[in-house]
Image 1 (spheres, one colour):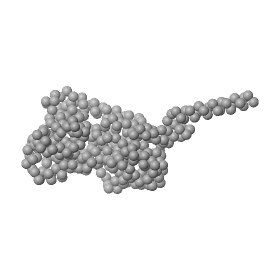
Image 2: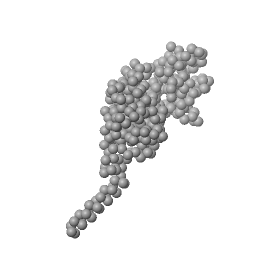
Image 3: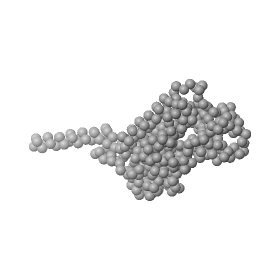
Image 4: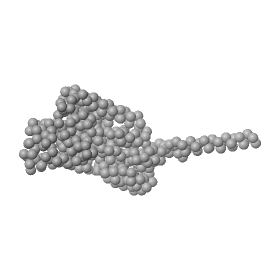
Length: 367
């Protein structure tokens, strides 16, 4: 009887220990689930082993591609039906696979819930990973009963919240090693860009202006950035910097004349807008030094439903080549682009980019 009583006591003790362990850690329900804290601080209970995912909204499908997780994706965004597009860096690489999948959302970078809940429920994914705002993530989870983990992050040259989004996604799918390798590569590029130009005296720097940028749509010549991560990364002199403005704004055309930049960068995808402006007022553009001297260069759009980290760093190196030719004399943009694209996507899409209008070189306003 004593032996039987001891056995019962031991079993009860072990049960208590197991329950305490489950309640204190990230695993619950006997280790069958775990808790992920997403970018909004939401605690989301997901399966311990995630095999099937849906990636929606700003940045999420792109991160899936960066983390080599496209084989886990079971649904696609409907924008893919519009055809191959280099606007999203991962699209040409994974277009054929995504086109075979059921559509589970509209796609886009708004952060709103534009998912198709009924279609998602039919596919029974383990987790939905979405670049959604807080309210949208909660709404989609309530609509589907499927865990929704948000990886929404700001656009730009890999700010801190991008690192967090990458790590959250990697934790969900078990791709931590790949994630840390990419983030280390980003750190290396940031350091390389900064060190090349950190000792250049301010009075020796060319004055630069980035116009016709793509920000929540296409913009004309005056569309620019105040805090511009690409220029900041190379310590460039951004004539459009304004301490009272966080990021994008429409610059006053007369202010650009006063700034009189030495070099102008324009998004080649928006040159039709700029050329229309030129036809209306050619004298304005010809009054700018950079235009008169032929120092106008392309800077392909890098924000489209989130930031193409590949394109952003390619732009930074290209801007360095133009603005700091001595410091970047050893950098060939085609070779550097290939290195970056291979690292993130495993495929060199540099020529496809050019064919799709995202290319590097001089550009003539008015043609």
